[in-house]
Length: 311
Image 1 (cartoon, rainbow, N blue to C red):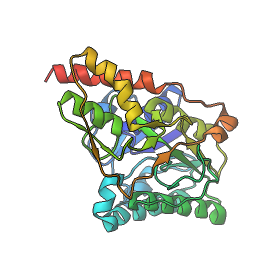
Image 2 (image 1 turned 135 degrees about the horizontal axis):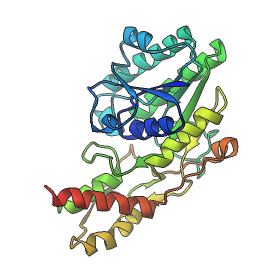
Image 3 (image 1 turned 90 degrees about the horizontal axis):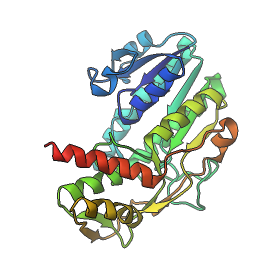
Image 4 (image 1 turned 30 degrees about the vertical axis):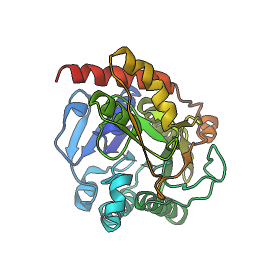
């Protein structure tokens, strides 16, 4: 089986590519930049191409192949600054990929959406796939629009598409200071002896899922998901910003660091809580998350502490 991973050189994509190779697939990673450290060690082909270039996508896709689309040009924080750019940088390329996948006849297209932004303020927790969608960020609105286009292609043209919506992914390779990822930002602030900024009294509550569990969940949806369906990827357990700091405190103190917290006014665009119900994928495939937040956070801390000591 040949699998093409668009955005396969990134934080989540590199772990997905590893899982696909381990499953025995022939993998081609597609990225906008030349291959880097994430992909050098992978036993796969690499193509430098842009999702928005339909001629390149047409050349790369093959009849009967699997396609995983992880590509996205913005993050939630930056989407507020320029909503039009968020839309134009992502929607045309994604819809073009649907057209090209339809034309070539792929076996399955798996679209990686966003469980952390498309649902909006929760009516119930944890959030199932049937929950109403009312995103409050340009990022979430664009993500949801792409989901709708993908499902439209399935219902009207029989495109074999599956949508997955991961919760807040984290892991040792997550970059800080990108406007995305509270765990990486908090660790970076501690090691840089800066204040950790929290909006509101306790901050927001999020479902933090280790990137390796996201990767295995994507593979499970690819193998066992049903065309035209949406699957959440989450732990079903919420943790507030203060909960995260409580887990980090003993790690920081053992290394001689103190934690300073600065509370800022809450922001209207922050959803108070987002925790996903992933029982649908568990039922379909047997997949379950494996890495606890405490374990994953300890790994992130140890990795960041070691990196900081070599600078």
